Amino acid sequence: MEKKSYQICQRCVMDTSDEDIIFDENGYCNHCTDFLQLLENHKYVEGQSEKIFKNILLKIKKRSKNNKYDCLVGISGGVDSCFVAHLCKTYGLHPLLMHMNNGWNTPIAEENIQIMVKKLGFDYYEYKMDWQEFKEIQLAFFKSSIVDLETPTDLAILGANYEIAKKFKISSILSGGNFAAEGILPLTWGYHVKSDMKLYRHIVKKYSNVKIRKTPYAGLKENFINKFIHGIKTYYPLNYIDYDKDKARKFLIETYGFKEYGGKHQESTITGFLQSYVMPVKYNMDYRRATLSSQICNGQVSRDDALRILEAKPFDDEKVLKDKAYICKKWEISEEEFDKYLKLPPKTYKDFPNQERLISRLFRLYKLFS
Image 1 (cartoon, helix red, strand yellow):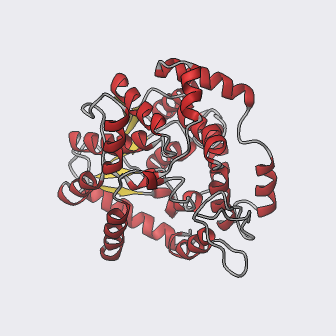
Image 2 (cartoon, rainbow, N blue to C red):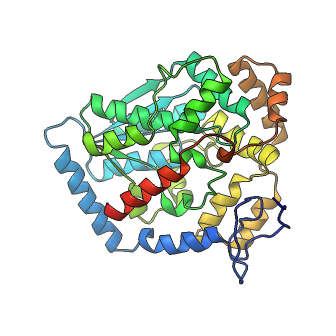
């Protein structure tokens, strides 16, 4: 395939570092064009959005009648999930707060979780992963050279959520995900959102000596069973309020004593390292472009400000060295071995057996009838 000459979108900041990007005659990319069309159905509308949210709250309370908990809230120690926990208190919900500990929490993230649990007074459940098995699964993805290194964690979060929801007879899950801030993400940068178990199992089998026995997961089949057989529904409260992450962060700091932890996903050592260092260095994918482009389209940041932010390196050299040493120690590999895998040719989901077409078709059908 002929390499594209460099081009950057004239409306957002996505560029040809996304190999599948398409530009129209105005120089606008497919990402922001699609996002703006979808945003019409997802953006906050004063009065209308609150009404929808109140109806959702009524459904949640009705579905949880006679149960100890109204809902399950996954909490990472980051702004979004902690703000959802705060909303539960504000609107009189009785959630079970749950954290899936995959072994990579920063001390600040753990402190934030405990701050919110104590200040809100909600029950808390920590789901601890089997580290030896999960470590080998993570290493398999790193050795495979696929960009979607967070696939094991993302599928484990889904699987753990469903497992604990069923254990405590909870029928509603509240997520901190929000369309306005996360709506733009090229598929080659974030295929993990597809929950593709065919790809997952292939990589684990080919690049590791473990079988997936103790690590939770939820792929296409598990999502279907839990949604339609067990009736577990996931809601996204931040889509129904006038949510601004910077304002939410300031509110949490002033109200609860929340601790600042850095940029997006920096509450996890491995996620922060992968997104700020591995993705731009190995794959030429600066995750900030996707986040900033979403914020530009949502009116939360100007394009000029976004371009200024992108002028700075996405990582701090000193922190990279420190995190790299820590990751190698936890993975029980040498830094030389780490560098060997880092230098392998970059790959995306397209280079592995996958179910992308099937998953996309089923998702379109689900959206059509839901």
